[in-house]
Length: 361
Ligand SMILES: [Fe+2]
Image (cartoon, rainbow, N blue to C red):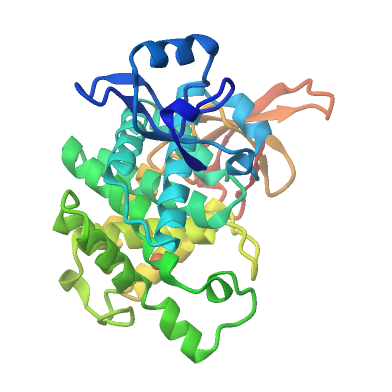
């Protein structure tokens, strides 16, 4: 992404930030617009001024086009918007440029709007890793999971937006880490680990510079690595000493990290991720009540999802029965040519040793 003067726009550029009238602040062109001759003419006649962000080809690196094709355009755009904004905020911080709250709030508004309407599609994008770029897709995924939790608990829109913003910004403190530590694939030295463990405080300090960000969001960022049994950092807080926002972000953070491929291990399947959350709540690290609600709020396998079971059979989700990881399935018989026919119903809840091994569509 690069910042240019509005007068420097060319046809074919994609806006990564909206353009507003510099006098009335009326929206002239929304983010995501692909610039045409007509747009340039209009901007010229309005004598539009100021700066905007445009996408560069590298911003789309690693985005899984196969998944993109199958997802509703608006949902896809909300996810990609948040990804591009999160990446830009992080990379700007690395260059010493403070968080652009207007950009972050716009992305959060769009994301929350889609979560309220078609949240299950965003959850699907998150769990299926739309973008093969852990650092920045993790920011968006945590935002999606945290906001989905708020939605499932009927939080007000302000609370859901704040949760979404805290999720998006929870790791921005990592922008202060030296690149060799941030990208290190081998085990960290004790000194490097101390540095990495400073990222919640670094993030909090960055958020303090932005007047529009409230203390609840800041605490969510500062405390997202605290654990209920006192084993977390930076302060080793316990139980309810940790803010509710931070306890929610922590669960979203752990779940997304587990279900992502990392340089040091392969991703786990959604049901395995759920088991780890439950195990960590049994150790008083994560909040059991929030874990329980979190797992029922993330419709990992929405109705209509085609899956492969652990015994190799294909099936389609036909009902969620209160246990999102163990839905009711319609078994499918067929072959790789794509001619699948229904072959009976399977209540996954009644088959504890069987699990969904893969999502195929
Ligand atoms: Fe973190």
